[in-house]
Image 1 (cartoon, helix red, strand yellow):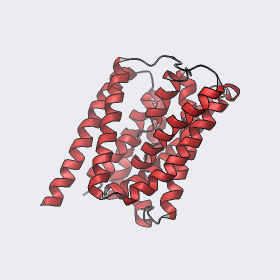
Image 2 (cartoon, helix red, strand yellow; image 1 turned 30 degrees about the vertical axis):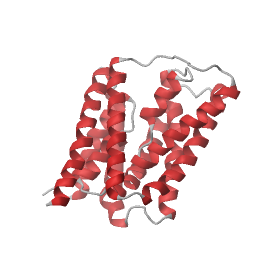
Image 3 (cartoon, one colour; image 1 turned 60 degrees about the vertical axis):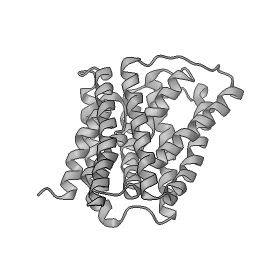
Length: 269
């Protein structure tokens, strides 16, 4: 029988590789694995997912800093600051709210969010991202809109243990008119303090993962995610991203339903 650590490592590689192919960290797809295959409760899975997301973000940021131009911080300063502030605030509050939710309520909320993200992936597969820029370049408008958008993203991040790139990137492109490559890098900058804030909040409430979970899940999944991210970045461009997004969106929706059906069935047995 495959040990838990080996299973965690093995599953992390294809998840991170697929995420690397389409520019995501893969945390949305790790969550069904943590709850379904590794049989962790939703309360246990979220901080574990946050820790692995942090590792993935740091690796992605290093890789992108070496392969892509530097961010135009002079034009993005207000947007990034506002989104980070909003995301950090709700990530801190959201971690506390998550701890107070009953297992049933938390699993229902997670299932809803995963389904919405899956639908968003499918939509993006049929509607390619373009620079829309629904609001102008005026800081007086960018700041409050960015704060509100960041707040919504931070809540999702702290609830699912994800970096939130699937929500941040479309927000930057559609609302602020940021180019897709720049949006990908900016997403990492916004996600890092958001994830760290969530982890700190969980740690202060004594809800972080145990030492055994750190050794058997976080460490092997983190290593697998690093390998998968490198492979995904190398293979990017071979498989059409739009097709991948539709397939992964459908898989995410199906797994979101099945993983909690399986847990419900086992709890009733």
